[in-house]
Image (cartoon, rainbow, N blue to C red):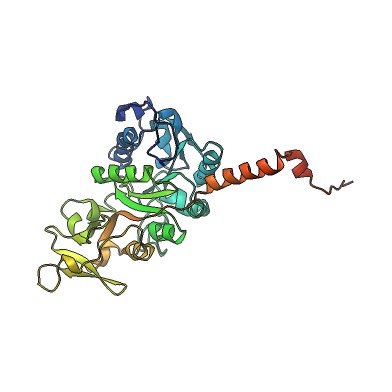
Amino acid sequence: MIDRHTGNGNGNSEGVSYTGKDFSSDQDVRWCPGCGDYTILKQVQTAMPEIGVRKEDIVFISGIGCAARFPYYMDTFGMHSIHGRAPAIATGLKITRPELSVWVISGDGDSLSIGGNHFLHLLRRNVNVNFLLFNNQIYGLTKGQYSPTSPEGSVFKSTPFGSIDHPVNPLALSLGADASFVARAMDRDPRHLKEMLLRAGNHRGTSMLEIYQNCIVFNDGAFELFTDKKSRPNEAIYLEHGKPLIFGSSDEKGVRLDGHKPEVVSLEDGNYSKDDLWIHDEQDRTKAHLLSRFFDQPQDGNQNFPRPFGVLYAVNRNCYDEGVNAQVEDVVSRKGIGDLDELIRGSETWVVE
């Protein structure tokens, strides 16, 4: 049976039938009551049976932070690794055990600060793993310092007079690193979150899914305009491949392109119709970059573009892990198995006395 994760045998799914409960471990979940991580955990456990990989072929690898406790709560293999280095460990694992379905769990501090370099290279290499970026715009585990994604002016314990840092835009960064799959979801829309998890799990290559996650203790309501059911229709837009960009409580607004310049237009004043709007194309890199710049902060007022949710960009390209193994196989077939000790000694040696 061909595995749905990659379509070419990433994880063995033959003869398995699970429910979400089968992926729940016997560990007590210890996040703060009301933390958005609970919803994400629930949706990952719910999505796993539909991804269809045997539990013993799944590995969750995390760095450090609140989100990094995730592997304990999954009844799969897992590793709670070191700060920001989960991508490196996941890369090594995927190269040596290509049959596994590998998932990286990371927060905005873990992956965009100390682990920024590892995050960048995972994306450009396109290692065949899934990266879930829990973004709550705060360091929660260390009790509330501003993070790389905190908006300018954020007042936290470490920035009592307001942050003067310009925030990282995770999706723009990912596209700049030539990621092959870039998407965004939110914890408070579990149905859409599950849909994005399935899309990510079935992508061949690095799937980067940013998830807006509410930290109820240190940064409660950071994404409320996008997650609240009353404000969401006017502040968020859901992307669907091949469909026009429409939003608003009664689909009364849309986004059109004037050349390469996007603009929000009304569909009620008679000047524009749905036929005039931007049609979303997941394989259009230029338009994905434009969408990633829909990043105005809510406090800037109502003149901002709606924040996109869904798959901005998804294409197929060669995977690093497959390339490494193909090269090794080719060299071994031509030159035989090498001698590591001989390689390390090299052709010239010196004795230091």
